Length: 463
Image 1 (cartoon, rainbow, N blue to C red):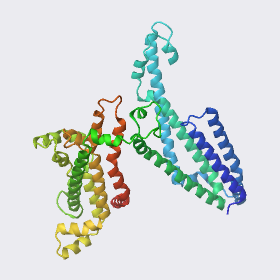
Image 2: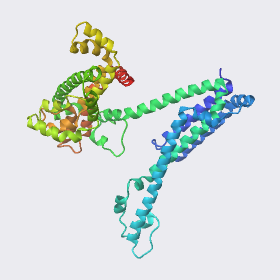
Image 3: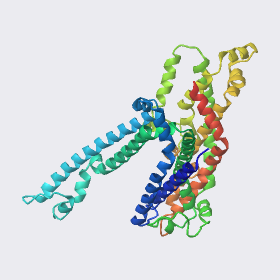
Image 4: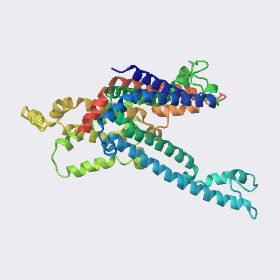
């Protein structure tokens, strides 16, 4: 059980972190600088006041033991120490990049300043150089490279990272032994760790979900409010006509039907070809098996932007431009799915295959009745991923579709920006509404079948 002092210390620490969090929120909320610094001061004072209350018993127990502890060896045994060293190395690399940027910036500025000054005195700062009539700041900015243009960013990230690493190392060196010497304090720190992990997970979730939230909220705004200089997180007035307008301005239902047809065809063919090829690579025995599989793996490293020209020529010669076949044909096989299913099939013991053969099953029967039921989570995962990839595909459908009759949903949403004729501003609110309607099937699919995705991925990675 925690003593009254430790409970008071925990309460002060929580209040201190709340004060620091409010100080952090004061930046986007445009509070005054004085308020922000006051909150920072309150948070630091509360945390410092809580430390003696929480650590008194641990320090007393640590002194009573009188043991000599090799702190560096103890710290290196923790996996967290290696992560901190990795971040420290990255911070040093960023510092080096910042130093290179400073040298490059000064060299570029000196060259431009000398050229602008002519025979007169060379300015020492950018403010002085701006006073010269021959100094063209635009040309100076264009001559800056990546390092010289962003050296302040490199220094800022490096210093913040080094500060965090230093605080964590000091905690491991001085605080961790005190916590280890006090059982109740160790339990309290375990609670802290879980709360911190939950808070970090919550913040990361908010960061990842914010684009979706922004898209949904923007679909209910007017174009003027959406393009305002100061964005609003909540519509001043909900506009529900954006969704009917999307259906009127473009054949959105046709886009959905085209996407559904092509996506289902791609999913079925990729799953069928993947299962057959994975069976051959995992359970078959033939010459050149490993070489062919390496060729399949090599296909993973070739992006479609490299091969789309010959594929486009082939589709054109087949008179499949602006047809379903033109969209589906280049996506009949997926090297990634072959690799994923092969890894899963290899985890199935060969005795099951032999048992199926003894029962008179053919190879296709063995695949359908033995391998597929045993690898059901992976097959569902492959189907879901294939469906999502086909639904979100943009580059290739954009290349081969020319009319509304064959465009998919991704291309159709992009085409919505060309339908704002007669309006004062662009119809980005309607584009957002179209994007919301486009992602609804994918979101529902993921929400209901996410457990199969996780299970299939983990089983495929176990081999």
